[in-house]
Figure 1: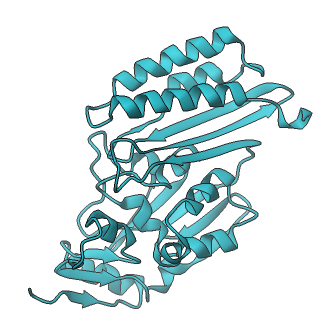
Figure 2 (figure 1 turned 90 degrees about the horizontal axis):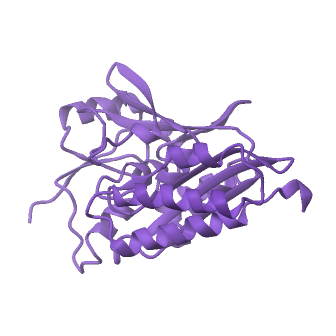
Figure 3 (figure 1 turned 180 degrees about the vertical axis):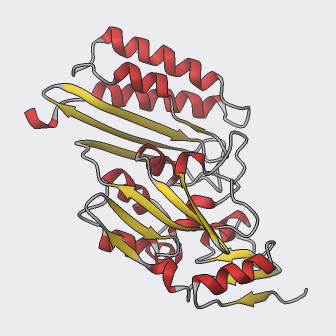
Length: 286
């Protein structure tokens, strides 16, 4: 078997030049998701051309302003958890904690988790409902895109040839109820696994904002805007009438998902939603 050709760029400019010349190359930070996709084979198969990101300092930066927290795509998960422990939204940090074990989190980068093409992993749902944005760079050009639009409706990654994800920007907003749940192993049991992300803001017993997202580990994700509109503005605890209407609305949305989402996953998602709706309360009155 031929040996892999590996590049180690030391700057973002050098990385973009190399990637422009080799658009078929695999961008490599920790390589943890790529390894999991190979199903624990005894002999790990490397891509033919690799661009290793470990020495690109621009991708390792973390910065903060009054309005947002900004993370380089190559920052290891454990470093994000350490630096952002008291400032990042809990729905996001909980998702990070559920990425493998500590050794994996020392290697895995945010960009790889977010852009993994075969399936939507932990961070995609939380960053979607947080209205996070990503910076996409290629030689001589850059653009910002909402995380929700990083993949199209058929699940294809929306990166142009020679374009990389360089930064993730997470706005600072106030949420007094946040929840993240990962069920199952997306690589070993994709037909039963899912993630559930939820953020709500409840003030004086009124739900001022309500957002949820389910990712079904394949390429499917569901964020039901009609359901969010229904719940926002209601008072807690929610009446049985509102919860019943929400269940029926969400059930209809589940039925519209593509065939890769199993009935088991849909039923599990519906139960999680029912639990969360029942759990909504005003934390200020506890």
